Length: 210
Image (cartoon, rainbow, N blue to C red; front, side, top):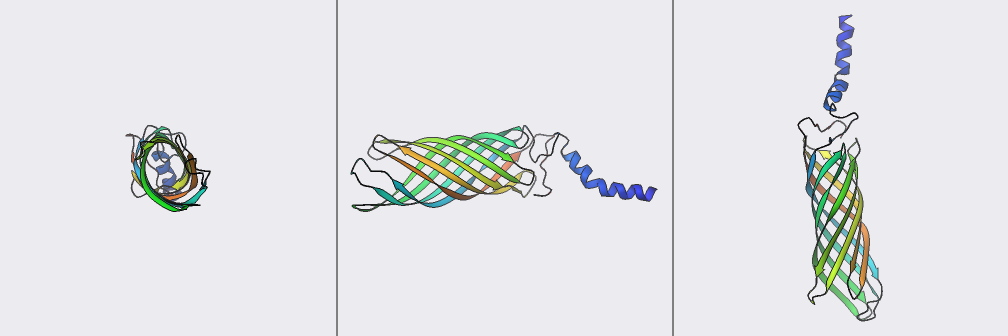
């Protein structure tokens, strides 16, 4: 009888360990309520665009854009696995434009800020939605308002209890408006990020299966 009891306890150890690791929640979660997330990521993209008639010269525009995006974010887990926070985006864009009069190219930098929401599944996959606004003052003193949003899916690979490497695929929307014209861009971005999770004293990060 003692032999069977010992065998049962050995077999149950993984389940008991997981139950203890999740004692601060009624259901499994990688990151518990009250934890804080801080980190950032870099992304890149290449896409084509078509703009309407430019009211300056009446020409139809089309071209390509190479974009590099760096992001810094911080968030708070309002419930297990759901984090809400703020994100700061620094964006570099190189655009080559074709018009009826020839070809033009320009480089520029923009800064946007806004909220984000992210939800984690227990297998490490997460979904993320972001929004941002910003402004850009051009050389000719014309101000351009920027509106951005993205929807993405990623995976958190925890290399330690509090540090995760996160590849991310997102689709980003960017709208630029000023007194002369407006441009709209939409396309995929592939990125990689590093996040740090500052957990509550009773909180635990579940790494099994990730």
